[in-house]
Length: 328
Image 1 (cartoon, rainbow, N blue to C red):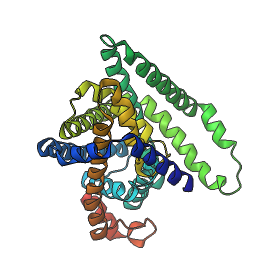
Image 2 (image 1 turned 60 degrees about the horizontal axis):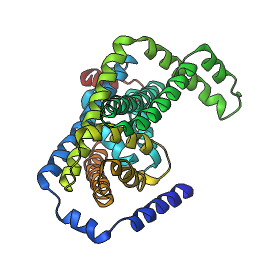
Image 3 (image 1 turned 90 degrees about the vertical axis):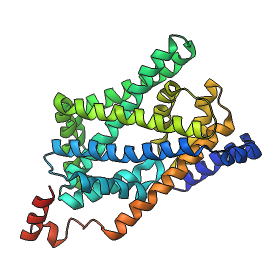
Image 4 (image 1 turned 120 degrees about the vertical axis):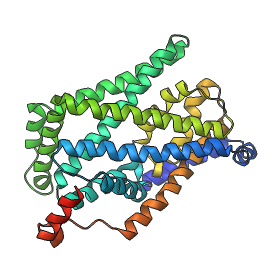
């Protein structure tokens, strides 16, 4: 954690020295409220789409989940884990709360992992497709396409290996002593889950479609934010660069993506003539929106916390079964 704090501080220092602070202040003072309001609405729709995609994945695990409850968990988990490196705390909170709500810890963990991997793949697919389209008139986008394609290939190879008998054998080679002995059954189930999902075309089609829609909505969110700070940016450029930005943000190298987000925006959008101050302002406004959405998640958590899976109510009392049946 100390290393990540140092990395965050270093990235912020770099941004500090590269940015014209008076110009940055003027950019904030001239924010266009209409475009900012559009970005807020799009951010809210992303939460809803995320919960719905997760609902579809859990259904594939034979978990009869409630969309309303998953939407609540989505808001709460983003609030709890947003400041974690790479957003990993968000995924841990999602898995824990879903496991607590439905008594299916392994299915909850598996669903969150599948959700994250498919989201990562969809980011790269969008970046490659839009990069190829733009490279017809602007050859400098070829390097973006090549880098994204290599990363996508690496992910595909890793999934293919993990989804074969060799992947399961590798799990079985882990020692039986703690802590490996406790996690081996869960890892084995995860490998089998990826294998099952890979063969289930009817499942992959809607999940992949939802993931692509989410990437488009996220790109439109940043396009609206660029408009709000007064930067002229093409939607197509956002469709290429924003997925790559979130691939970088998924790496646990800074706290809450601070510095990575602003530096990534400045680096990527400088290729299409956007100033450093405008890119940094866009990143900071997006960060402020995420902090704004932390509030409703914390309020929901305080008013209606998810019970632990070990409680008597979740172990199968008649009241618990009746309540679960009614909610589903």
